Length: 117
Length: 346
Image (cartoon, rainbow over all chains, first blue to last red):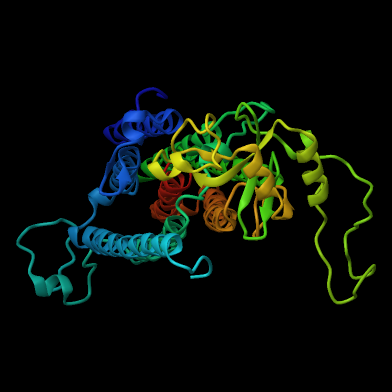
């Protein structure tokens, strides 16, 4: 009786777990070894290694929200109510703050203000 | 006339969905509110991480390298193990998320004992994670090498002539000084200070002067540009690896050390031995906030666990409470995935 309850639901859960663990393992290995070809080449002012980390993180987040939080089974109005504001607001906030941070870095480096700006 | 259907068809009439008297998003009140709370809390953490991003970009050259800071592993004292422990913590939290989903799944099948077992495993996973985070904090606060903070606020660290990190206690001399901690009872009554560091600035400077094999490592990330190649203060041979911190020549080191103001050991909310002040501040704030969410999640899980055992949901013929609590727990895991990326990896 104990063995035969790998129903479709539990099988998928374990598959997603293996996927998330594998992605985390890849991230950690890349983080420890930092391959030169990724670390020293950039795209849009961020090195490729960081791009990989961020994309893999979003991939993991997708699976956690879709499969674990079971949003895949919900009405599309609920799905949209959760995902759309987050995507829009997060991207907007990051866009503004990272550009501003970079600008302040340039001010510190090139002009006379060095602190508390 | 009320549309009370539990099935989804494409021909649903707009007015019948939103006209009232039913669940437009096919979800109970409790579950819907938990989703909306998660959205708002996710935005709160986004705000924190965005602030972290701003501060990090402001000081992008001087920010510490995570794999030089987080390199401890339990029971392996003195071993340089960058990132391994935090990777283990991530696995533990993901695993506790999996046991939570399995509990929810068992709840759908109304299998009370299975739900109880999986919830118990989730709680244990959560407790191990919080304990691990506390251990990381302890190591972070205690520090390892010690550093000097200059009058301008930069952190100076020490290396030997091969470029290997050196602890303050390895070279600082012990001089006969009578500076003691100023408390309200042994000095001016209206001010006091925390415990003094193990060495004073004079002792560190004297030790540095007595030992010609010590060099200073600054906060600044080294990049091989024309400007840095022409810079005479940078050590000619030791600055080999790009994106590592710059090492100065002996003369430049002595000059920098003359501007020392504090000896910094470990970390607190104001200053830390790893680099810019904001680094420790943000680390404590964001991981602390996340840890707070984990702790409240564990507490709520314990309450629901007892309710499962008592048969509350069995009587109700619905384990939806387990599902709602599961949503919160997965949210905690989700936030950790992002915190892990932005603090430790990037």
